[in-house]
Image (cartoon, rainbow, N blue to C red; front, top):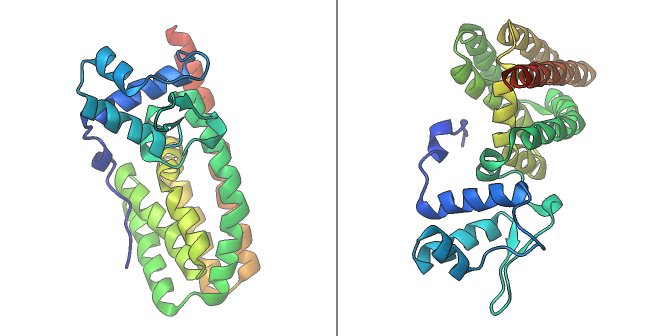
Length: 248
């Protein structure tokens, strides 16, 4: 089954427990929680004026993201930040921009390790049907260079198509799990002048190497694409920092 990129609006409707969990996460990140002790169910209920059911659901959300540990009869404690679920779209949305910037740099490291080899594997194993779908996606990119949001979805699917062609379920799950950070990264690089036009040319190079059944060429083309993306990401983040500094 083909999987498209979820709509960014799909995660925008927030229940009360999610809103409270977001507030507490930002408090933890900002250093507002002392001694590693997170608010208890009763603390949350009293502070936010919510029911114990809402407070309980809030803690379940935080625990599901590995932000806190909740045990019966024990206090709620904050887990080490290195153990949080940074692949969750909720957590990415709640973190400060500087932390998200760090995560995007770490995402690039992951992609640089995996995707060139996935492209090489795909060049050796992609079916004609896969190549046909990739061609449609490259053509769509060319048509959508003035529509960044629509372009982003096709871009994501192009990379996932290559991942599926490599025929490795574990790598497929790793790449799919990182899709929210990938979306965030693409939104940044899409802002660069002529960024989408360059991206189309780079995707075309990857596609042509796959059609040629050239693993080395596919690996090189993917590595070049990711390197260019990373340079653009750094440049865009630097510009955002300068604009923020001028507003202060």
